[in-house]
Length: 112
Length: 112
Image 1: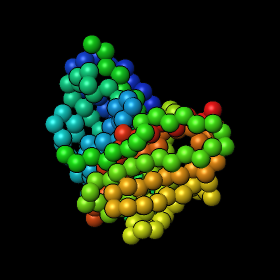
Image 2 (image 1 turned 45 degrees about the vertical axis):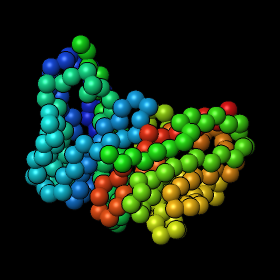
Image 3 (image 1 turned 180 degrees about the horizontal axis):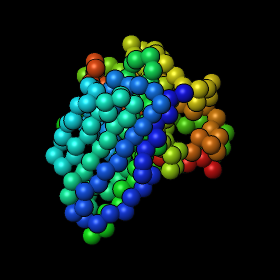
């Protein structure tokens, strides 16, 4: 089945540092999504990518759709305490529809 | 901004009991979903619902599970006879057309 592996599994960084994380798959996808989950809340969409090679920003967040269509990257610049949470990549299930397969998640902790 | 709302936020039940988790999707959305997240794990698709019927379901969504849209605003997930392994966060989501999913804040189900 579809499997999305995220790296790193968790990271503990200092406030102000830049953060990079990635998501890889053995399958090709035409859409990559990045969600953030705050503690006790549901996932919230951060960035959606629809084209291979696409680079999209949302404030301090930048995500890239890998050229092979098998991976995606998320960068956060100048991290702040509210960036704490779990970041999930997600792709549509094979066969279409808007059901999503979520990645394994990257937990981000920010030290003041 | 419109939200998906879920009640209750936390439900504790004894093994073998029936539970109903409630969701109010965003009002003009037509596609509804339930996802599940076991503690510390990724978010998993359970079922999608459109035009008053299930459009797709995962292997997790067995005969113990059912969904219903009893009126024009609510969307419910029923677990007929809960098991310990049903303990998880249950997220409702909705969308309109090709828009990305909007998730609720979830119901934490604890089966004792």
